[in-house]
Image 1 (cartoon, one colour):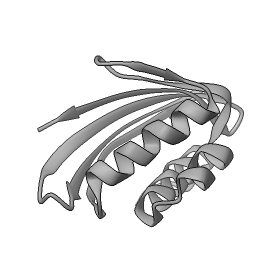
Image 2 (image 1 turned 90 degrees about the vertical axis):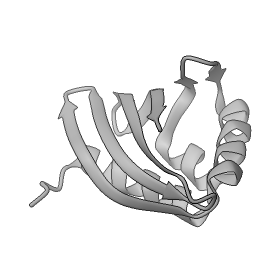
Image 3 (image 1 turned 60 degrees about the horizontal axis):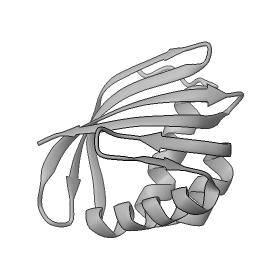
Image 4 (image 1 turned 90 degrees about the horizontal axis):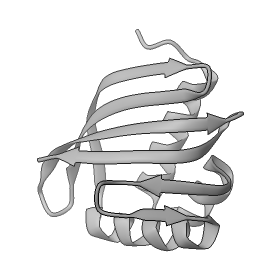
Length: 115
C-alpha cells in the first residue's frame, strides 16, 4: 500500500490537475514562484512560460490515463517518479520526472519520456 505523505499528495494533485486540463490551477498551486521545467530539448522558466508549456503538453496528451505509478521515491527536497501513461493519441509511454521541492511546491521539473 502506498504511503500517504505531503509529497505523494503533490504528485496525486499534479495528476488530477493534468487529467482535468486545469493548467492554471496546476501551475499556480503546484509550482513555486520562478519554477522551471527542464528536458533534454528545452528549458522553460517562470509562471507564464510554464502555463504555456503545460497547455501545449495537455493538448498534446489529450485524455491522460495513468496506468501505473511504477516507481516513487522522495527525499527531504525532492521527488522522483516513473509512471506508465496512456494518452488520447493511443500511445502508452513511461514518463520519468524528478521534482526539486521548495516546501510543498515544485521549483524544478526535470522530465523525460521513454516510448
